Length: 175
Image 1 (cartoon, helix red, strand yellow):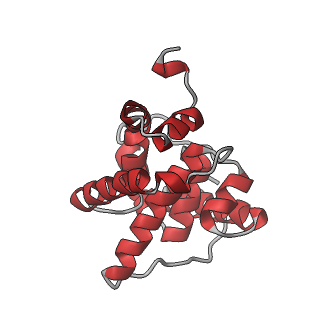
Image 2: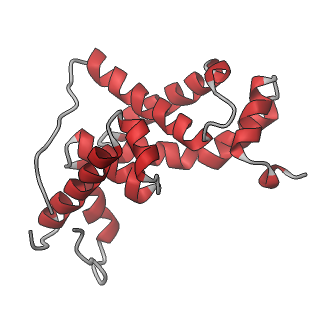
């Protein structure tokens, strides 16, 4: 069976048993998404790179804490977000909450779509940005998202809704 056919969860179990190649495969599969998550979380490129390295180091060092049956991607993204939160706390920064409400406008035809959207996402408060990135960009369902954010599924759904609403306002859509 080739590396592409092995599930992330099986690879992580192999990592727990000392298989370095499986760790490399997981890194290859998820490094871009983890870096994107950290970068889109509002971190400058240099800081995102540091957090990225810290995240993967924690994945390896914490491999024994991975539970069979747990979705690897959720576990990995949880480590990335917690690494970011811990670094912010150590630096004396806070993770802000927000109270807003509204849907994402259609941006077809905008040549600067990626830059415009990335800037709007980065301007969201951390709690909404994380919910949007995990729920919309990375496709976490509401239960998975709730687990990552440490909130109820209803609260997770509300955060995604508020993030979409805030983005609509920021991108010139109607409230």
